[in-house]
Image (tube, rainbow, N blue to C red; front, top):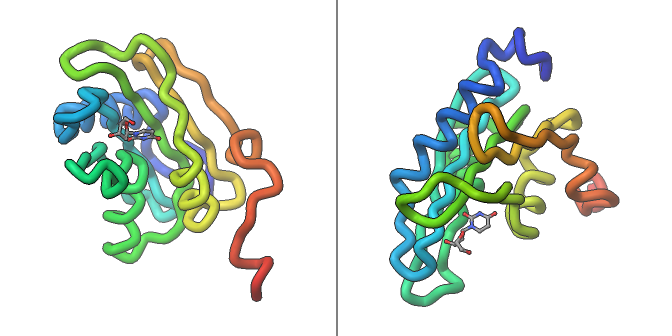
Length: 144
Ligand code: THU
């Protein structure tokens, strides 16, 4: 189910959706705007942005916004996620890697073959297997 053709969305489209999602970021404190777009194993696509809070710890990252939207709609298997981040009003100048909390949430809701893309643009991106980003992750199978 992780084959991109089966998912009916290509990487460039997912990156475009992540870049688009950055425009929705609520980041009045860091001014760092992040967008994410994911496709689930059943082909559903979700976008997310970071949502900051004056109580900084209450901030939600773009990746988790997208994942939680998917889960609320009943889609618990993320097959691929694209992430783009950079200063508000600018194109990304670096690859934005998912934070530790988002990696742990992806551990919960990613397929075994989950792919993670970090993108500056549709032409300039890197792609990883999830285990490269979170080796020896702690998951539900450990406590079942
Ligand atoms: N941020 C994300 O949205 N995703 C990450 O994986 C890392 C950080 C956001 C949180 C905060 O709004 C801003 O980037 C600066 O940390």
